[in-house]
Image 1 (cartoon, helix red, strand yellow):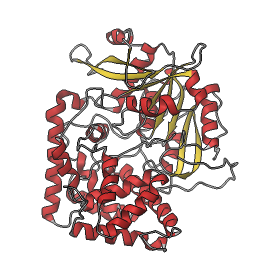
Image 2: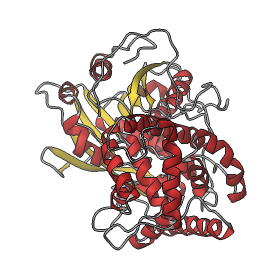
Image 3: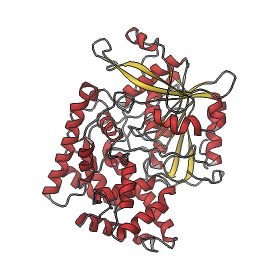
Image 4: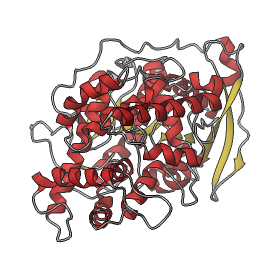
Length: 523
């Protein structure tokens, strides 16, 4: 069973701004390809320092609470609400908040190994939905037999005090905003859209907006670990979930158990580098799509992969000039069309759908690309949006300072972004402006995570991953004191649970037996 796992940095956040079979092979000594290229030590020397191993007395009531489990969702799942402090630095001076938790009990009749906490990414993805729709029923049977599968929606997400920023109608307008401005008027319109988005988040979330950082979510995980009765955290994180898991290891190395970090982020990279690297990652994925498309009889981009980017750029320029009808009350703008293409880069299973959508767009029908864009934004058929995009901005913009301090800086960076991706570069550069005038100051900065003293950690990277370029997995594995890197030579976003017997077998052995693969193992 496959599910889509997303990572959206501020560069693919909003449009007014963003599994397979193969054989496992022995390492051949050659360097794996990277999406962004170059050296893995491009970050900062700042290191995330661990917290005291002793739980402060002011936090002990949170760690000592008991959860009131109730049946919820599909049969076999239980939900509860975990109480955590809004502000860990002043738990007595601020309100508490409740975060939503779900579990699927271990299927083995014997004593379970413990809890496996999971996070699907985002930031903003619902771990509760992920457990109910995939992990609780779709992870390998042996893993589900051994562990209670547990998901916690991070603060600000879905069932955990969700941040809401715009009405559905306002979000429709927001996603249409041109993110490749051609003149001063379009630049001003983009800035106004970002300001309205940020103001809406502040009006809705209030004080919470300053307390949705990844560090605080990691501290919530530690409370949940203790409440569940686990001495150490066992964890499976995809995409942004790798940043959350690595942050936990950095803060609580002595309480870090078996951690699988699949589709890894590199926390040492500042926002501009993250966005530029991700631009290159999507370009790598588009190149793979174009090469595959050229071999198909129905490829709308022609039979020359090297010309595919220019053909797509020409189509997007035509849509910018004249949006396409879609058979409904919304037409397809350039921003929505680009988002539709980006959406299909996450998994090659979407490639046939993208070929058809591009063919239809070439013939004047934008419905296919609009549907792909709606999928990316998690827009339901009734026009309603979840809070994924709102939480995504809230977390990204507090975790790091903005990539750019204004439109002039974004424009100056366009050549570097277009070098990373001639098709997507300008879009990704201007999309990074979403955090520029955020209502609360960032509480985090780029930093290395070493987690000295943690148990062995397994980092998984996919060579042609669009959203979390392979070079990030190299970077994270190099930072973490006890990490081993498992490489999947393939396409798509993340690797575990997609059907590759080499990857799945390696991760299963690690989770179930603690067996760490040889360093440099490739599948």
